[in-house]
Amino acid sequence: MKLESTLITLLALFSLTGCGAGGNSSKNPSVEYGQSQTPVEATLDSSLTTINAFPNLSFEQPLYFTSVPSSDNYVVVVEQKGTIKIFENDSKVTTSKDFLNIKALVSTSSNEEGLLGLTFDPDYINNGYLYVYYSVLDGARRSRVARYQLAKDSENEFIDDEVNEDSESIILEVAQPFGNHNGGMIEFGPDGYLYVSLGDGGSGNDPIRHGQNRTTLLGTLLRIEPITNGYNIPPDNPFLGVGIETTGEGIGDNVREEIWAYGFRNPWRFSFDRQQGTIWLGDVGQGEYEEIDIVIKGGNYGWSLREGNHDFNDDDIILESPLIDPVLEYGRDVAQSITGGYVYRGNKIQALTGLYIFGDYITGNIWAYDYEGASATASIVATVPEITSFGEDQEGEIYIVSRNGSIFKFE
Image (cartoon, rainbow, N blue to C red; front, top):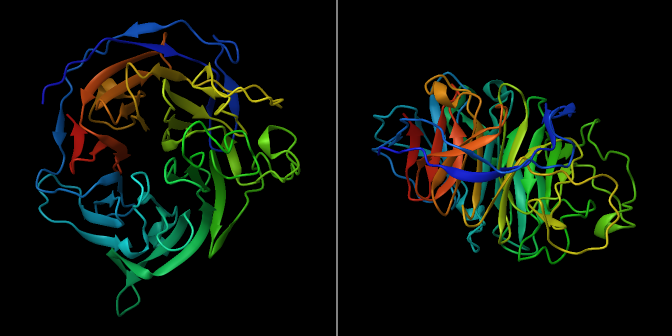
């Protein structure tokens, strides 16, 4: 479909910017820390279209797309009910097959539960490991990060398009008090560590006050080193050895050393800029504001003291450091459920190079955000219904996942 760029007004909010996964950071030289710029207006002149990338395929409640790190040109789609489909990255492909099917393990009793995340081990080609994040069906409500391995043939060689469903190794489990705000993105950073996004535990208004509580893993972005049946804490994690919580709701308890950053409501999707290593994260708002964050080591992103850059819960908390503003926020009059995306580093759409691409589940609008331009600008460049996720192939081309069962891409 032919799509025209649309003029919108967004409030561009700058704070501490730019960091690799190792945590080095610097301030935007033109803006004081914690301050915001005035609203800016922008258009992106574009003749972009979106097309169905795989018109002969359809998926059941797809939530994620990514490429398989091998020479086979395989890509995969994660389906919410517990299946991962694998197929060739070819617009003419007519069939897909089950790469992994764990429906018997996955709870979908809440709309935000299910098989929510997938990532491949940095050494996948040699060890065949992949990791999934899902809501556990049996027992108490909880989220699980688990490792699986490729199946092997009679000669003990990996089968490229089949996972051994009996190879599960549980890396991490987190109790969930409610069925929503599960987060669900998992991704290895350029540093080789696994990052995991977790929402505040659900319900509304952060009723248990997880957002500012560093003694819980909820409302955070975690950074861990997976091992068989568990994980290690990386030696440079920001809260390693901090000990007792002296601020927030967890005063008197031990700070969780897995935390890389905190103060999130529902960080549904985050990504690493494959050129700069910067972590971009979309945090879904409560009722008035959606936000995009650049995540830094040890950062506090405000929930539920703030929603976006605005006061929310009036809790009496003495903060150890300033809250970090979103780099971009917008009101619910613009869009209503943010889906974080990627900085475009592909080769086919030069107009998008270096822009952060993200969308909205409710309106279907897709924005290109020029964060490093002379003035920060964001413009609608396309529309796709029910955007649940974005994804990249091996070449850095961006794909858009629609809950209606299709995977789209730009042309």
